[in-house]
Image 1 (tube, rainbow, N blue to C red):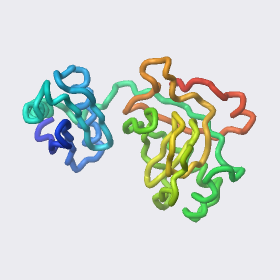
Image 2 (tube, one colour):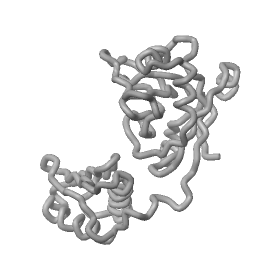
Image 3 (tube, one colour):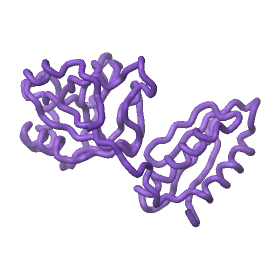
Image 4 (cartoon, rainbow, N blue to C red):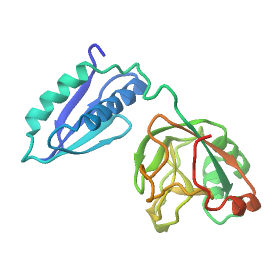
Length: 236
C-alpha cells in the first residue's frame, strides 16, 4: 500500500514492535495483521514469535540469528508491498456461540446493567445483536478479542480480579468482549457462559477461529446449555 504509516521500534533487546499510525483504524488493523501473516509464513530466520494485536505486531527474535536493525530494515521493505485495503480473508467464517446469560444473578450481568443504567434483558439484547469481528487472539488460551457491544459506557474492570475464571465464560470490559477458552484469573465482568468447548489441545490450531472471522452470540436456556455442554465450537 502506498505511503503505509507504520512505526517500527525496539521492544527490549530481542523484539520489534510495529505500530500502525494510519488514521483509518480498520486499515491499520488489517495492515499489521497482513504484516504478521507475511512474516510468520515466510519463516524469516531468527524470528521466533509473531503476535499481532489491534493496531500493532510484536516480533520476537533470537538475536544470535538476526539483529534488530536487519529485521527492522526487512520489515520496512515488506510493509511497502502490503495493501491495507485487502481483507484478511476473502471468506471469513462465522461462529454461532450459544450463551446462557446470567439472568439468575450468579455472575456480573446485573452489576453491568446497573452501571449502564439498563435492564439485564437490555444488556443481553445489546450483547447478542452484533456480528463481532475477531480482532486478535489474547490470553488465556487464544481468547477471541472482539470489539465490545454498543453499551452506553465502557465497562470498568473489577476492582479485585478473580483468582479463577472458568472456561467458557463470556465477558466484557471497557469497549471489548471475549470468551474465555481456558480457566485463568481475570478482572473482566462475566455476563454468561457458553457450553461450547473453545480450546482443544488435541487439534491444530488449538482454537477454531482466527483474526478476521466472525462471532455471533445467541441466548439459550439452561436446558439448552446442558444439552450442548462440551460441543466443539465450529463455523456454521
